[in-house]
Length: 376
Image: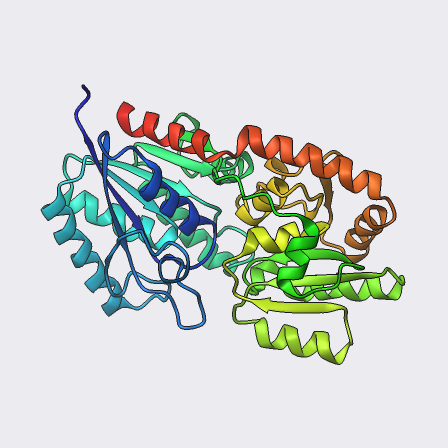
């Protein structure tokens, strides 16, 4: 029998979102007799929901103060030395870092302490567009180049993420693996049961956005689209599940413009919300592979999304939904086509569901990571 592989998963914080979901599924799902894991993470900001506290309560983690989102020299140094001592104590075979800050501190700590450990880093998305000024972005690229040269395997969540990292010279192509996230199939819930549970009308078409209300996700654009649909007289309602620093301002604007929008806040019943919906929408400036769109596809919903990041790995334009420009009028055009044609919604939804079952199943993802860790 092959010896057990010891893997240390390091992620800056387990805020509700794609990286946290993937890491939690790895912690839960990998065969414990083959792979022993420890999860190391920091704390979330106060305006963020912590996935370990709200959803994955069964997943155990070792918390290191200072590893979270905000950058502060003193806190970062403390987190760095905390990681060094954990690595020395645990002696992992593989150190697998996720997200930018944990990628820097975790790999730096492993260079100092984890002499024999193999380094793996996952780009769940990247910070090359829409986050920093040009100068800061250049610095980020230089730092990532330095660490990529000292990492055995670079995982890109989605093919577009890999292309964009290679385009700026981060890592060599032979180091990259493209892995798709995998999610458990949702329980079957009928549309009417889901709508009754949520206390919403059964007479309306619902277009649903699930995600953080933060600048890169462009909730302002989502409300522009809602406004455009209202101007066109489309009888639809937008459902928004998620919070973030733009939550209050978005709510205030929707109210003042009398938009047909319901804000649900943070929710753990996303499968139910999608089951109650007719179309899914994402309006971001930048994405890796958004897990919420995989959940929408699993629920059999056609998707309207901006053609950014690796969304095109999930949404096949004009087959499982529409990939549009970032212009609200283009997004409203796509929505209008779907609103006016029930058969088109059904056809695209079924095609998306079949694709999600083929490429984004939990079994497939667990197999990919097990094979990777064993090969290392």
